[in-house]
Length: 228
Image 1 (tube, one colour):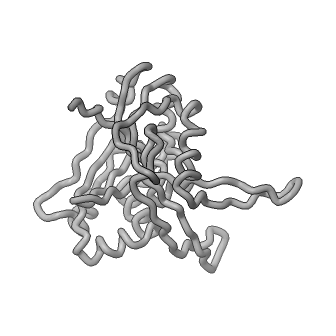
Image 2 (cartoon, one colour):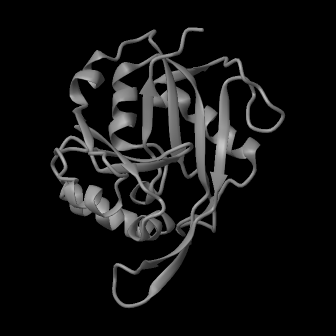
């Protein structure tokens, strides 16, 4: 697996196009990575982080060729930075503490009767979105640790919801002509975790968490916990 970071220039025309459409960004990411590998160790995941700078993260089974992406939307004077993710994944062990950042699409399925596929809905309140992640942590291989920052809306002392947005876009139907209107409850989480099951966490990092992985959701990244 390979993890790539590209600093983007949001003022560029193509950058605005890709950032404004998860469908368009999905297409260019697939072009850079060669698409999902059916028999490979994982799938392609991507995420856009916005702050003082805007960065695109890509996790892919094969080392990507991001030269065209950088030429089209990269910040001036920057290059794609790609690292082999496998040694990091292998180093994860029970008891380790890591700060994490996750962009996900928290959702649930409502029953429509016996034998009928449930209707999928997005969680829309901060508390619903927070509980969605909290309930999944045991099978994802970690537990949430207390964090110092607590606010009235986005944190319960274990996980923070730091950003929420609802991108709406048109998706081409796979079975033929026409398009579907798609809405994603894209939610950005931050917090500190303690690893309880390294193998389960490795699977979650590689496979992604939740739905809408093709559209910028599911990728969790880890960083060393800052020591103040």
